[in-house]
Amino acid sequence: MEDVLDNHERIALQFSGGKDSLALLHLMRPFWDRLTVYWLDTGDAFPETEALVEEVAAMVPNFQRIQGRQPETIELFGIPSDLVPVHSTPIGVIARRGGTLIQDRYSCCMRSLMLPMHERMQADGITLVVRGQKNTDPLRAPVESGHVEDGIEYQFPLQDWSDEDVLRFLAEEGVEIPRFYQTLHSSPDCKTCSAYWEEGRAPYLKEHHPEAYEEYQRRLNTISDATAEAIQHFNREIS
Ligand code: SF4
Image (tube, rainbow, N blue to C red; front, side):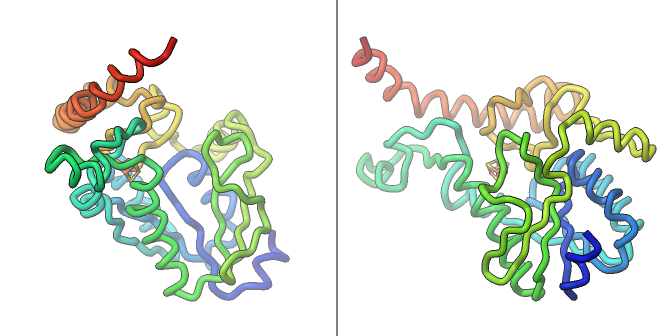
C-alpha cells in the first residue's frame, strides 16, 4: 500500500460510518497524515452515524464533510423504491395527469450520494481513492482494486476480506462496532429511505427512531398504493 500512496499527493479515504470503512480507517492509521478522510452527509443521516463521524473527525488529522443531496433528490424525483410502477415515472405522472413520483433506489443513491462524492473528489484534485469495498459485498462498484478512471485510482485494501475478518480486526483494535450491526447487515445511509427492503430496517427504526419509523411506513404505504394496479394486472397475466 505504501508504494501506491507514494505515487499520489492528494489521497481520499471515503468513510461511510459502516463497519468496513471503520476497519479501513484503522488499517490505514499509519498513513493518516498523508490522506484526507471524506464523509458524505446524505442530508438524512442517522444521529448515531453523525456521532461516530464527529469522533472520527476529531481523531484524524485531515477530515472533510461533503453535503449530499438526498432531500432535494427525493423532492425532484420522488421517493426511492425497489419496485417502480410505470405510472410513477416522470412520463407516467404526466400521462396520468397526476400521481406519485417514485424513483429506483440506485438512481436515488447515484443522484444523492455518489455524484456529489465524485464531484468533490474531482474538485479537490484527488488522484487516489481508498475505499472499504470487499469482493464479498453483494452490492459494490464493478471494478477491482487498482482501477483507474477519470484520472483517479481506486484501491480497496479490504478486497479479499470477509465480514468475519472485518469484525475480528475491529475487535482486535478495540473498536466498537456500530449499533446497526446488532440487527442489520449494513449501516444504512438515510433514516427515511423507503428502499433496500432486504435490509429489514423496520424493527431497528421502530425501536430506536420511532419518528423515522412512522415516515418509513408512510412512504411504504405510498409505494404499496402506487404499485397495486400494476401488480394486479401482472397477477392476472402470469400463468
Ligand atoms: S439510501 Fe435510500 S434514500 Fe438514501 S440515497 Fe440511497 S436510495 Fe436514496
